[in-house]
Image 1 (tube, rainbow, N blue to C red):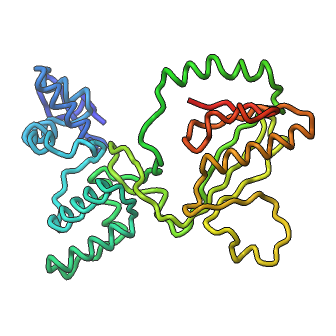
Image 2: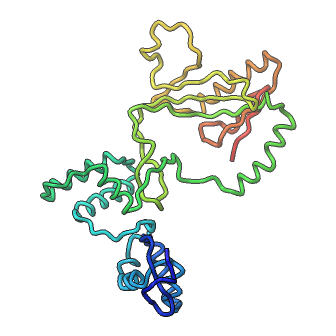
Image 3: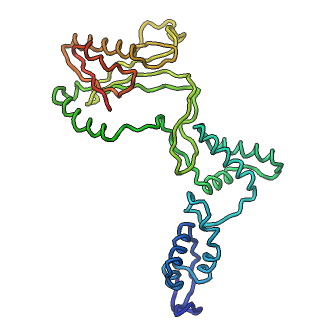
Length: 309
């Protein structure tokens, strides 16, 4: 980029620019940091491969560079937004939605921008995908998967469990007799599972609509045996069961179609009876949900339940 043998002097160095170099905001801040440390300007210019006039411009624009949005330090230009008030209104709306844990997507942002455009009296603003891409890049907005829970398990509890419990289970039970069981939700009419949000923001979900089923699934360590699924709905006899004589799954119900300790206990006892018939003893590993009864082992003979921290 820099040829020291050609005409055009800066101190004792000569310059020829073979290709224009576009610096990011982060790189410009690094240059300013070098200037503040008292490094000679010609040394800085050589280090970053820029001519002296570019270095002078960076120093001149110090305030703009240092006050630029730090979450978007990879941006390479300080641009002025033509529709600044629309931009600010959309940004404020995004902050409001994320504070309420409402998932948002690109089309939502464009639709909201067009609403603000009409309210602010613009006629030429189009809210295109190109505008959306530039808006997201400028403000450091990106897509993230929504996490259903905001509280992590204590690290010490996890480490203790990993150190002690698995070895205890495998000492008494073979892998084919060690099962992991958990519930999952089959949701419909639900909100997005991803949202556009700011890079540094942690992403937690809000309240989802309650149209759902709960499904309990289980399999052993080898993956060769899967327990019969348990489906939990809201109706005792759903319409879809009409004319059905048998199911490939067990079915239970309550008003919210959630797993409860009563349903879980009933399920464990049914599984225990089948293990007694098979003359087989197994280990079940559950998470520590309140819906998984902690005293159930007192009522079981051939099934022993262990709980994750």
